[in-house]
Length: 336
Length: 235
Image (cartoon, rainbow over all chains, first blue to last red; front, side):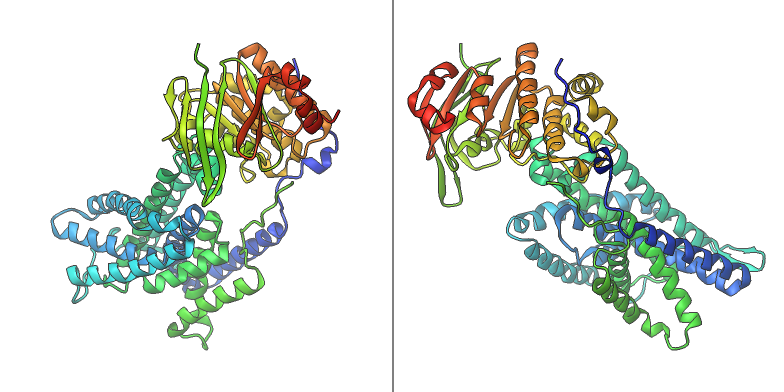
């Protein structure tokens, strides 16, 4: 039987991926976590703000992950991702008005969001994507305006309120007041992210989706239905956005059509910070942005809450200037 | 007996550029057939026309079924594995994931296929967790072949398998192809620069020039042909 032995130079071959700055990034993250832990132990206010920051950060991370999924699959930055999340949150509100409980509406909305996202990809994005990614990006900007208009037309005028999904209980742990809402937000986002990760990592569908995103032409050659995978990717991203919207609305107690606009900026900053290609980076980036913004407003007098948005922009620009691949972005290594 | 793969008057173009001007060829089940020709003759495009990765017209039939309206994913699901020029491995994914993708259009367990592939390429088994992009060029070419075998294709389309490979590896590779053909009856259509090797492995061949078939015959006939000897075999 013919066999092909790999040639020598094992040390050279066994090198896996470009590790590069990875140890530094992990070191920084561990240092940051240690800083937060010490702060939480020393100050109850600090601890409360950290939990709040993590909860908001989970929302940013969820929307950032939606952006990353779409970007990886179609090389399109979906500017309408936030508005889609807002629209699906209104949909949930409407379902609750029609008599569903919060959680019935939650899951019904996720299902609708999936179909809506996939449909948008098929109807609006796919026809222009063949020409250029930029054309598709412009379509998403149009979609932003369109969704905004539709929501204002259907549900506009005045604030709406979503019922609190986790009640209004506040836990007291060693003098630190922690809202059940925040814990719930963190849990829901982490579970959704984990489910998406499991799908990509361990299922055949997930493998097909990754292949279609990485190399569409080669994926088709092994029998992957690339178009279908991209539509599913948009559907999943819209679901993650809906999760972000449904968790963001109760934390702000109000629902209005501008709900997701600042959050979209934070999500952009999170996605870029994490590396636009990295799902892990998006979630970690979201948590970092959430905690940093919450703490910085409290402890740095010069930065007031009005400066949160510009601060997020500054993060975005600084990351793009000094490390465009972000914390977890991998420079592509290919041996030829 | 009709051939497993039949092309009749197949034309293909990239935008306004006509590359194939009516190619006709046939590949019998269980045979190895090679396509020779100079650069730009349309060899790669012929394979791409079969797998549906280029816009084509004319009649293409696989086991009696017309292919000319099918996209590449549908062609793959019929059991045609296309190993494109430049390997086409998913360099960001692991060896293991690459192999699993090879069998993407199969249902059920692929353990038997993987076992079989590992008997041909034992080193792949040890490297299954390695990211494919960190393999050497030769290893990536082997992985691309292995990935095609996992599908248990009825027809294997091989595009320039020797490109950029050390001669030892090229010989090895062709030996495996021939062995799969003899042991398992795998049908192969191979495009190759190295006419000498290709004609040794193949039973029949076609010579393409400027998008047309200019010569067809058994390997022996082609090896004996003066023009082929001068242009492609170098003696």
